[in-house]
Length: 286
Image 1 (cartoon, rainbow, N blue to C red):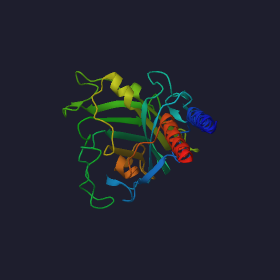
Image 2: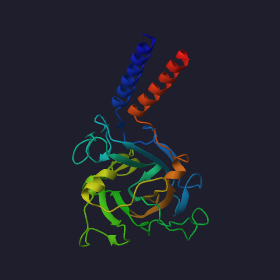
Image 3: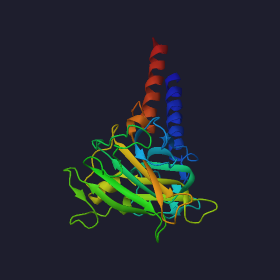
Image 4: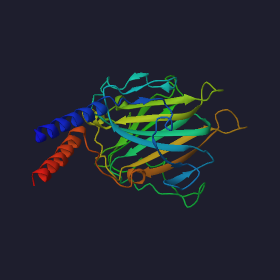
């Protein structure tokens, strides 16, 4: 009877754990800090980032990664990808999603995001903030890298599939024979400045790793050493219309999550609970 009580308790714990995970829907707003994304660093310092190079643009950078659930959605008034459920249009439950975000106290009007999945790009930092010698925006990254832009356009701040470097090191762009359009694996949203209908103050950008694989885009494996590069540009105050300045930063996944481990799935948690309860039963019998 005692053992039966323990097993009932284990089943209840497992059911509650699975229910909690199943009901934890993710709602994105376009503002990384609001959505509790991991803060990486600022474009004007060298804290927690492999700083690359750039001008006086001040923006914070954020990172997230998660597996897609049925209830995940984007809601808000940001410009870019359509508002609504994330599942659909090639995105399915269980897909692995990588997210990069930026926010700034000043106006921005374009952003370029790069994911060097293999982490072999050799992006190099400048010696000083505003210094020369750093390489980020001119370098695509290592083999198996993708890059995309979100800019003012007819589809304001929607992501554009720009280019990738395949696992053999060859560069591919839209005009290259054999290029695979991977726009369906990307989504981004920009929250516009309250006093400006064109420039933004924050952006969230998502890449669906599994959709890239289904499309046949030859990217490297996602792991602890995957690197990320962001460039954000904005208008220069007092300068002629169209004069922009930007800044680049680079960071690695190991910087964001120094202790890279595996979060147990609900089923694994249930097995752990059963093991602990089983140990308690054995102890009582002894």
